Length: 233
Image (cartoon, rainbow, N blue to C red; front, side):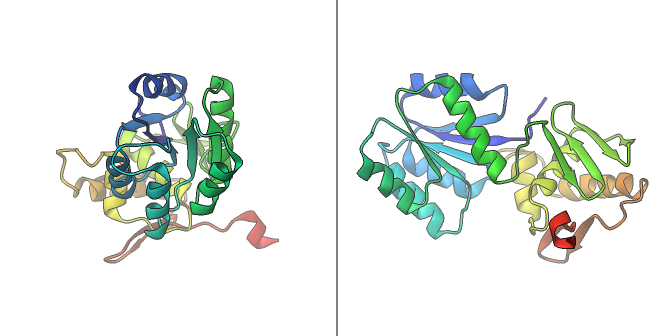
């Protein structure tokens, strides 16, 4: 069963990378890059909820990687994982756009706490593992969807698309982004499959009174548009 949260780990120490994957694999889908240039390419090509990056990397450093991502408007939260412990190193990391900083060696529990905190801050994760968008409640643990208590039966990819749109509510998402996130950039499936699953998803949502939840912006993309409670106050 695929998980809703996707994390990119950029780390050239294979043993450490394996350990981090082991720490987090029950919580999220982890993709690993062992080179700074490969990591930057992956971060720009595929949508991730979080990036965990070392500083000392072959190809380009973690600082260069983060700086380049921010210059290209990639706002994915970044957690620096490094043996560098000086205050100057930390300040430099934050100045180029990092969101948090964890020094090696570290405890498994602290890594997980910091990962959850960054994901919670960006609205991707909640402690009860649910997402609420308007009248729709999405349970990320059991992959259930309810509207006013009524269960909406979604197949795997339909659920994944709804979750991705919900995690980016009120933000335009392109068809390419949906395809890369749900099927993966290496998939042999044609991109037209996005339209098929979106149409099925819309039909099921309309059946429970959610006719205009997902809107199509012609030649641009899609948006799950809801009014946040705070906007109505």
